[in-house]
Image (cartoon, rainbow, N blue to C red; front, side, top):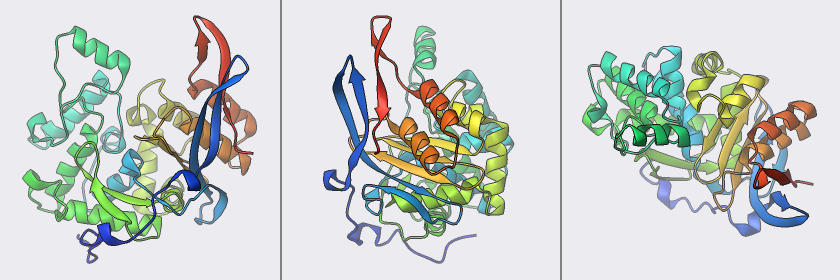
Length: 337
């Protein structure tokens, strides 16, 4: 199954504007003992299950690289191509995992069942994303490895999808590989707009720029289970929420409480989609991750997609504490109004 469209050929000549300071507003501020110490600027879009915009904050039509918030669409492309996964494997294909032994074991199983080992992965060798997991491997004398890189599950999924279509597994990241061409097609269909620009992510996979409005629409389609592949993905994520991030980590906490999907992306991105199909996409302009999840939760509450008390509880659980030694002396506050 391959796409007839060719968005990769001219995606870098479309003339879309990038998100900039003029298109950004203050999303959140950090208060330390009565003085605003930091301000986070950016943009965000909230949509309903039909993709209609419920709230626009800043320039939601500007181009952003979705980074790892693209992973749900990449996983859907794998499913459309005929790749088959156990629930935890499908979530690992969608994950930016913390590199726990549980995560590594699932990726190893995927590779073993496909008669491969970690040498087949074309993501870079990196320490685990989680600080505790990184420290444990360093203390045990390990080196950075491809399998502990946070995108290793996605790469194992790409390999499985390549096998499903008879592709050349040695070139599964090439722009003209059938898996990557189909990913681009899924991005266009789910966002409802042409790919703005094609580049490469930190893990070396092709990366397709879209607008925040388009990204939110794609997540709404996914979280509401509007297609068979979206339903399959959401069933797996809600069954194995630990696998998308890590136990006690922000994405996993939000999924456990709300259902649906929550997915961080590098350089200040997050998406959250509810089972009803309301979805939000947030981009913090300077790439900071600190405000992403609190802002997304507050925006969902502002349109009635989740309860205010639920949002406040989750913001408290997922926000960095502002400390002076052991004393809490301030807070991150969402500043959208």
